[in-house]
Every structure is written in structure tokens, then in C-alpha cells.
Length: 126
Image (tube, rainbow, N blue to C red; front, side, top):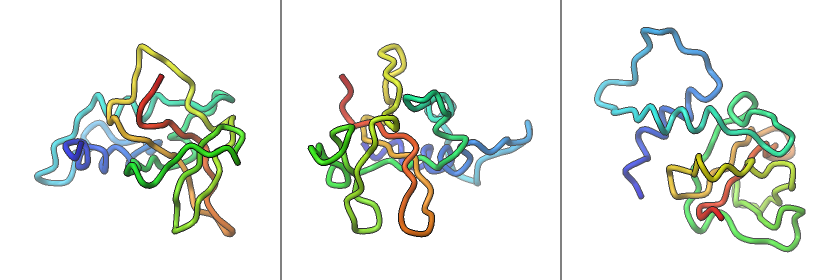
């Protein structure tokens, strides 16, 4: 489960950020290009790219839950508070392109008043 942490850190830091062809990861960091590409390909139910508007955050099992109080049925723990996931923010399902991390991922940015959650995918899919 932890083997994706370093590649994901780089993938998430560069999510939506064009890199020059000669860009290299920090020294000693192995980057899995397939995982990075997966993050770049994801869209929500409106077709909005997850990476163009927010950073992806890989969640631990205690940082997300099923929740009847949200339109999607999920909520995530961000900054010590449980936030509902709107149904439009669910990642568009693609059985041919499963989540390579095996963990839940939330794409969000922090704004005044709380996070704006653009995309979410649970750890176990379909």
C-alpha cells in the first residue's frame, strides 16, 4: 500500500502543471509514469478534469467513509472535519482504468471556509 507514496507525491504535486520535457523528479525519487498519467486522466461527472482544478490527495482508510448525509453517499475527513462529497464530484467510472493506488483519492483545493472538492474515488471500486 505504501509503495505508491513517493511516486504519488510527485504526481500530485505536478497534477495539472505542465512540465518541460526535461523536467526530472527530485533526486532519489522513482516516478511511476503510469500512476502519474492515471491522475492526469481523471474527470468528475461533469467531465471536468480533476487535475486541472485541484490537487489529488490519497486518503487513508480512516479519512473517508460512506455517508447517507451526502448526495454521493461518501464523505472525507479534511482538516479534522468530515465534508460531504457531492454526486457530481464522483470520478467517472471506467472499469478499464481502475484506481492504481487501491486507496480512496480526493481532489480538492482549500479555500476560505473549507475545501472545494472537485473529484473523489473510493478505495475499492465497483
